[in-house]
Image (cartoon, rainbow, N blue to C red; front, side, top):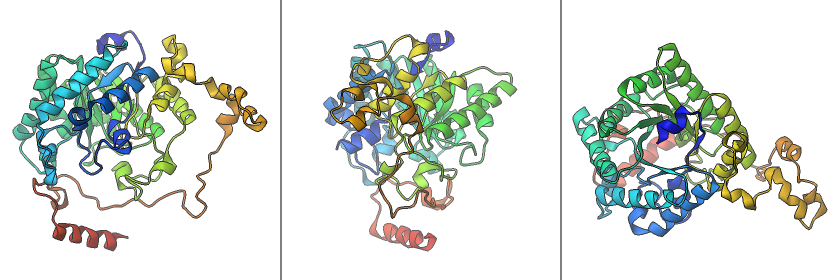
Length: 392
């Protein structure tokens, strides 16, 4: 199981970002970001699982991000599929591919519209329980509560998930400044461990090095409190030095113009080493992380793991395969120091290198974050456009 692996010091490599990868491939709709593709296009989800497995992942996370009933029917998202159908299909796909290698299956829940709309603790917990019941029925190996902006909601998720009797990992989408209510990373981690999480960390919203920094703060807080936990990190595959507390969602490029910010495979190798040196043993990726990024994690940590992933048969370490190129100046790049020293250009001479993030400053309880079943109306959009123009 996951705890046995981590207890022995084994490096566990997570997978990458399914919603962004499948949106680019035409199977997920940007906006709702819901995972009905597990039912409607299982071949696409299965293939992405397989690519991450081949790249070195040894956790197949169910494609159940935003698969709660309240999210599936939010803002006019008329799917005609139930959360149970999607969650069951996602579990079957993850288990099928995990069986093709040495991988565990993790069932995942994430933050809910119910919490943002100030529903009661019992109502929010009921949403998590519906997903957990499917994961128990499908006998996943462990559970992940991921992508939480508020530690309180994550605590509620842990309280529910630990009732399964399976190990619970919890991952917040926060940076060094803490959650959206200003709770520090260290305090967040302590609260999650006390709630019953055995693995704590962060995912999404921030770049790899920022996420490692945040998990270091969590680790320091847990150790100060005299508690014990394992640590995980699954960051964005985008550079985000200009983000504020809410991360890349506030960047004007989100979500359709983030490509200039994509991290290289060499950036990922540096991240993997930094995470390992920080004592983090569950290392993966989130939005933007493609299989080649996960392969970079597996290649960097191959000395510790004792083997390379299958996908490395088609990849020369540090560009060594370029010695077979027809052009001599490209063959001259078949060396580590070239790629380590390179400062990649964006090719966009009239574009800034840094953006100014939006700063609406809203969080749970604010009228702008109240959710609804009905589609967003034209009048609601007009008001949002007006507010956005005023903030420019």
